Image (cartoon, rainbow, N blue to C red; front, side, top):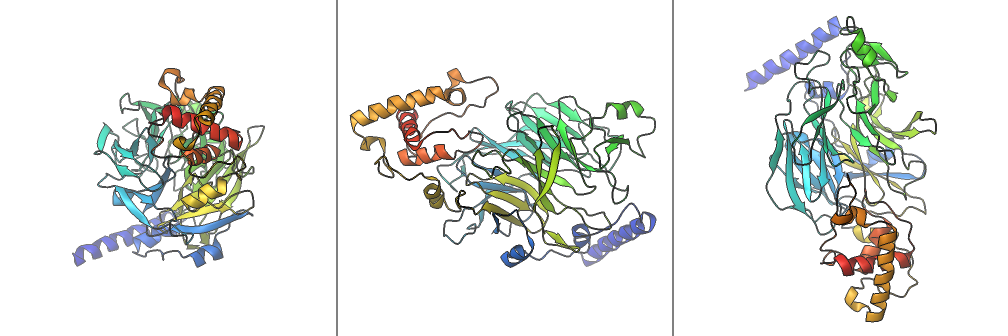
Length: 519
């Protein structure tokens, strides 16, 4: 065993030496990849390191929320506010616990789904977790009755199989679109080549049951993160540019992805000005394909490696970031000087132009790397959660101004979001505590609000709209009392929008919903 290990190390070092000798300008081996080849492991980050290095915008605090999360990759938040993370190399999805003991940090983690085949992107829909595995889409049902109560209620099943595997880019990202379909990205098998399987370097689309596989868009070398812009439903995806063309070429990309769109790879690349240029290796002789290539909506610096992207949707979010997108720049491994290693925000102007700004920086300083951001999730508490597969951690970025409550614990969340009560009802009050006359009056008023706000279009099958994913109202009394449901209406779980209602209106709506759909 020892001899085999020595041989592996020898060949890795020889490969690095050959690359350094023959590709001095196009290939520089730096940072985390070199550490991995040499068997060096990054020291675990500490809150002291975080405080000393990580910088967020004014008015925000950064907390090293959770640690010891090996290969922490993609994040999702459940309807009850629990935070889940995929750990690809460990073959599992874990729950990152909330702060129940009041120390301002996560209480740890526990595995929710295990024995998966390199799970990466995943999403939640109608009581099931849908998981992008290396060659399949997996689905497993779950239930939850509050924060951190999630548990599985069935076995993992593969609803789609045969997705291309292996090669340079073997992780599969997955999300549900506004159309109720599943979208899965399949990166290229190589740095630059002409693929034998047309499903490589592409975005695939499936029906919700895993059937009907189609290729939605092509020419996407390695689109790891994608999300739909609120208000427009425009699909944007990050894309990692090719290697071996030097420090500053080509740019990494943010693409506005449309059906049947072709985005250039391997025949064309984007430059720093988001213009299409012929690839020096595969461009000659493919001028027609280059002409068909769609230019990116925005360019990131070369080798920044943009991964996860999340649009900020909460109506009570900081106005400076509401509607903006946060993008995790994983950071370069093949530049002479390290670059990236931060989270940036993208802001769309009235003219459609996109402005990039730093949001969370300091993961890399003077060649020293303490973390590599992977994905971003917007919590039900209003905080931003960021995964880091190099530091095996999740960070929490939260506002500390007087208008943004600190929402680290479920009880703190409810207390902080509740409006001072003037209507005289008791916290925790249930339907049976109301007088018959008062209950009837509140039910009538709540029913009017339910109708006025068109709540049925998302919750009642007979009145739902085409393309809307139905969220049935059931078993509500076992999960909420009047107070709790009224507070939920003040800051609901996305994609449910925040509706402008007074405290009295939220209470009336809660009474109506619990009375009508509580069982």
